[in-house]
Length: 553
Image 1 (cartoon, rainbow, N blue to C red):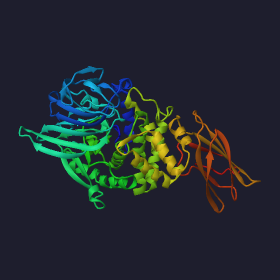
Image 2: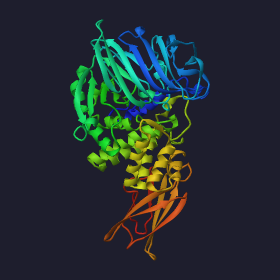
Image 3: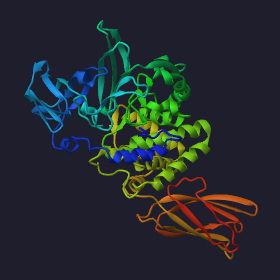
C-alpha cells in the first residue's frame, strides 16, 4: 500500500500520508479482540445493493465459521454503526446483541471444537467508513470499498484482523449504467430488469479481510494484456484497467508495463496467486491499495507522468501482504518492507542496478528524516493502526531485506524467499517464519541479524579514522559507532586505490569501537568505505593519512 504517496517517485507523499495517519481515529474493536474468542472464518458471502444514495444501502452477509473452542455458545464479529435487522444460524433465527463495535450471535446450542456453522446477518444503514459513497472528480457518483487496516467492519460483519483470512463472494446489485469490479473472478453479470444489474465476483483463495473489496461506477474497461499465457494456458493472468472514460487513454499508457511486472515477479518468486489482476481508478483514501487481484489506485492517476514504481509496489504486494499476510500488525514490514524492496529488485533486474541503488539511497534518506528510528521495526501494536505506516515498515524493512541478501548471498536469499512464499502462500506468517526459512536455506544462524535490525531501534552511525603505518605497510582504520542506540554487527567493505592497485576487502564490525588492519602494497591514494552502499546508516570517513590523501566513502 502507498498511502497518498504517488507524486514523482512516490516518496514525497509518504510524508503526507504519515502526517495524515497520525490524525486518523483508532479503529474500534482491536482491544476487545484480546478479551473474547472469535471463530476461524472460512468464507464470506456478501450481498449488497448500492447506488448513488448511501441511505439506500441494504445488505446481508453469510459467514461460514469454524468453531475453535469446545462448548461455544456464541460468536463475536466486528460490526460498527449499521442497524442489524435479523440474524440466522444454520438457517434458523438466532438471538444477537450489539455492544462496543461488536455483534454477538447466539448459536442456540453448545458447539464443539471443529464444528462449522453458517451465520447470516441482515442489516442496513449508512456506512460510516469502509464503503465510500462519493462523487468523483468528474462529478459522477461512485462506490469503492476501502478496508485497510480494520475498516471492513463498517460495512460487513467480520473477524476484521489480518490473522484470519477467508474466501469471499460478492453479490452486488448496482445501476445498469455502472460497472462493478471486485476481487477474484467474475462469475455472473446479469440484467435484473428493474434498471439494475447483478454482478457476482468471488475468489476461492483465502485473502485478508482488508483486501476484500468491490468498486462501482461509470467505469471504462480496457485490456492491458496477459502474463504467463505463452508458458502455461492454465496459468494465464489477464490484466485489465478500470478507469473513468476521461482518463482511459493516459491510464493505458501509464499501466502498459503491468503485465511485464506480473511476469517478472511470477518468475522470480512463484506463480501469481490470484485469478486476474485489475488496476482500478478509485475514490479512496490511499494512493495505492493492494487489494487481492484488484489494485485500487488514486483517482488523479491521469495527472501522473509515470506510474511504474507505484505499480511495481502494489503488484509485489499480491505476493507479499496478500498471498503471504502478516499474522499480527507489528510484523507489517513483512508486507510493506517486502513490497518496497522488491520494487527496487524489479528495476535492478530489468533496468540495471543504478536505478535500484538510487532508490535504496532515497529510502535511506527518507529513514534518516523520519521520526520513527527510536522505535524497533517490530513494535507493539498501536491503538491507532494508521501509525504503523512509518519509514520503519517501508524503508527500513526494505533495507533489512537488502542487508540480509548481502549476508547470505543472492542464491540463498532468493531461494529462501521462494520457499518462504511457497510455505505460507494463502496463509499468514510472522518474522520468525522468515528467519527459520532463511536459516534453513543458508545454513547460517541469523538470530543476531533479525534481532538487531528488527527488534532494536535505529541504525549504525559510523565514523572512520584512517592512518597509514609506513613501517608495516598497513592501513589502520579506527571504527567508532556513534549512534545513540546499542552497537550493531555488520560487514563493512573497504576499497583502496594506490600505485598500480585497486583492492576491496570486507571486514566485520562488531563492537562500539574497533581497529581494522589491512596490509596493502603501498600507501593508498584513496580509500572508500561501503562503496556500494550495502549497510544502512551514514558512514563518515575522516582523512588522516600522513600524506594528506583524501579518503572518502
